[in-house]
Length: 135
Image (cartoon, rainbow, N blue to C red):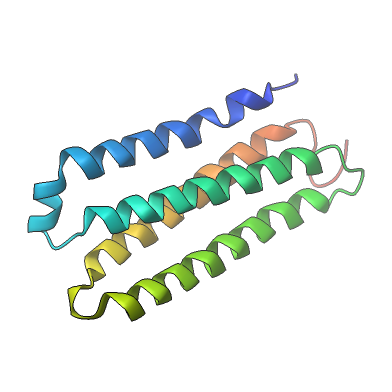
């Protein structure tokens, strides 16, 4: 059973659209709860781009004969997201000063977990016939 690669990106796109709609439709409600919607939107956009890139890399690694290439792809994407988002959070906290939104950072961390879970779930669908490196 071969899964079409364009269908693999569909859950990522749906998650991105849902979070974007929430950021723009519930701006006032989010601000009342101490969450800056633009920070959440920026984190959502960054996570979407990183996940799309790393999923593309994982699609390429499926055809690799080395059974550990897929695991390295998944772990590499987790580390990439962690460092890029850590740097983005540091830059935001450094530049925001008194107007920083710590709650928006917590929401962004939740989005990080959600995107990582979704990416691993999609990666597991790439080659369902292989288990533990065996064909």
